[in-house]
Length: 326
Ligand code: ATP
Image 1 (cartoon, rainbow, N blue to C red):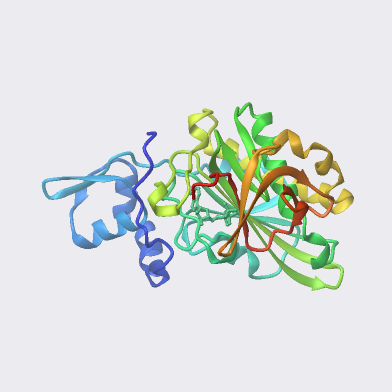
Image 2: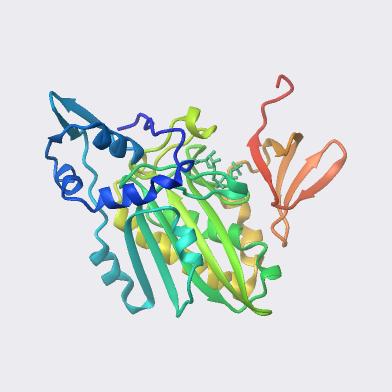
């Protein structure tokens, strides 16, 4: 299915629905729908199915999912990861990052859900994805670094994910600074890192990742063009989950040992806008220039009419240049 899904615009704005949806996802009716059965239609059923972003159709008094999603094979994933990482799996959560931030940690833990009602993006933005089609996961770990020294980690993770997808022969994958994964120039994965100091030199890190695999939201809903990995690859959701978790672990370890040095050298290999004209959106302001790359702090370097300028992440969004007209 190459059409964007028509998921509710308000996803994430009604977290009071969480208990209802979580209970619905555990109900026999939902299990029957996932098996392809038709169920007695009711306004409550339609409301839940729509809130989960599931395509469905009505057959008289009955409701049936148009393409019932297949749930993740967590047993396989646990087997592949072995004792190295603990997996917590839920059908419906508010946010995998929120759960991952809670509680204490021993080793690496992965929190995976089929659906997030309030998937988090940067600066309070939302990650929107329907039930079961894609990947929503967070990896929690404790690293021997201060919070202040983790500034470039999100670039390192984005770089590692691009490497991992390319290693799986997904063509056309690039990175948009700081860490959006693009396929054919459209957003296919987002990364949100949250941190919590354990001591002055130890920090709990949660890396949340959303990957579009089977579907993606309409541009009207998210305000930018998106796409899905499934258009460039037949990899299963489980294989992509495994590659993603391993990439996060590997990239975090590499960052703790070497910082951004290995990445700065190779940034041009992954940079979606290398040497291109770009716009940097900073609140209401826009800075235009040529994208030059990054420095060792992970700051973006733009050659503007005033000379070379560097920008730290903050609430800054990079876009291809729209020229003088806008
Ligand atoms: P940018 O740097 O482009 O401004 P961001 O890095 O701030 O983006 P994220 O925090 O990674 O954005 O993710 C939130 C944003 O991603 C949303 O504001 C929305 O535009 C977009 N988005 C939400 N859901 C999806 C999705 N499933 N696929 C692609 N993009 C999405």
